Length: 324
Length: 297
Image (cartoon, rainbow over all chains, first blue to last red; front, top):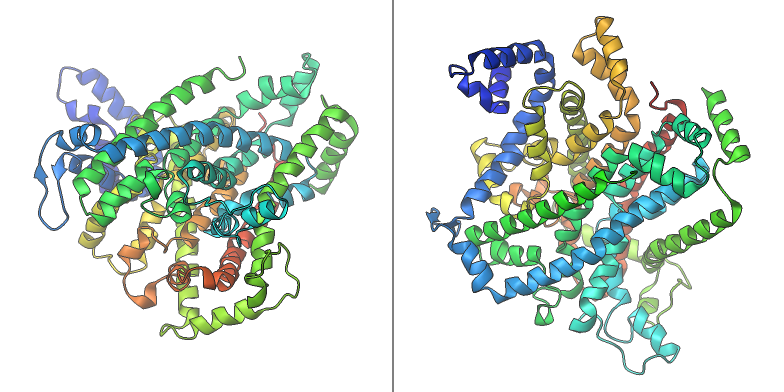
């Protein structure tokens, strides 16, 4: 069993293996020898990757394929080429609103939340251990707490029972309650606040773990080499040695800030007034789980994927400059 | 071991390398401000959970509860006593799925991350890139293909429909690989010269060194699975009522709107307790390991 898995894995992982009989015989043979030598490594990664290909990679590939079809779940998909993509950008005005909202949203919350994650993790790391775990819990709690963020809905509730309205009225700033969650002027802003409140999640904890695993002798050595204050220490020692975590955090923050949907839907409802709270993923949910146009929904997902990929490449480039 | 902790702590307090008091003060004021912003909704939630009905609809609304009561929790139990599957069954489902999924994911993902981070396998980079890319694809559209594969494999409407996909999430592998990259090669080489197998190296050298990473991964994975039922893919893979999870049931029952905001806060509070416990347990050991093992050559 394990032998055959291993063989499959080798073929799956290495396209060059298919060219075994080709002109590159020497190189292929060498590669094969190297793979044989490291077979224990392949055995270690086989169980995960078998499941990964079945449950994660295959569905993604299938969705990519479906994006070129017209598929309503009941009838078999029919191939229509680029039509979904063309419709998306030419005919679908709502998608363009969603695109605008999502970009606006990601440009504001993405960098802000990423910097907040790192900066707060870095500050917390200075605290004595006991206090540190309490504060970490406090900051991480919103993301651990499922849909506690719905409490913001009560706070921003449009009648005078809403806390924000009640306090603003009590102090005389406003006379009439503001329809926070119905007025397109405020909607995106409120979703941003809630999303920022929720954003100290995966990246934040990864940074904390990374900072705690840091080699303290590097900092001592840095002090001898003439590092004088905490900002230099941060830039020249801490950030470069945390580069793998920074990369990880960037991917996580980008994915979560582009994929905002649940917060928007739960806070301002769906569809939101004048589509002011409409994002790419709520648009996707609309076509995927309400209208059952899976081909079209897959095309939306692919566009979103391309946007995320692009911003990731840019961010990775920027991160390479850290510490120079 | 104890000695190291104490020594390190004292060293930090006495010398405070590269730190100045005024900047310290400013930064910690900032930290305190951010802390209040994070905490306010929680205080609000706890106080809502303890409010009696008349206080919930008071005008002007009060922030803190005046006469705390457990009414909302009783209401919640009352709502639950009407469901035909006992609450304990939902609880068991959630705990079973969350525990199995977390343990399996942490072990499998770490096992796969080690060769990718340290062994320079042919094809390894491609595999890793695929994993990272898959993180960026919206899960809403993969739900249907996933449903098909799960049907083909005959896993539909069983715990495994929730657990197997959890084993194969991309997050864990990405996280573990990033952390394992920091382990010095020299250590692994030394173990190899001593004749240790790759699995042995993985178990007795790599895993202890990245303890903060997998303790953190436990939190991520558990948190994700704990809330798996509501709206996520899970709901469509499992349709027998007796296999559903707590989260799903809560969201079904409490979608009753504003007049249920009391029981809603109570339910949210209950659902939070377990992840918070897991967090406290793992996080306190993260902090302990940190003091004893730096990643040193």
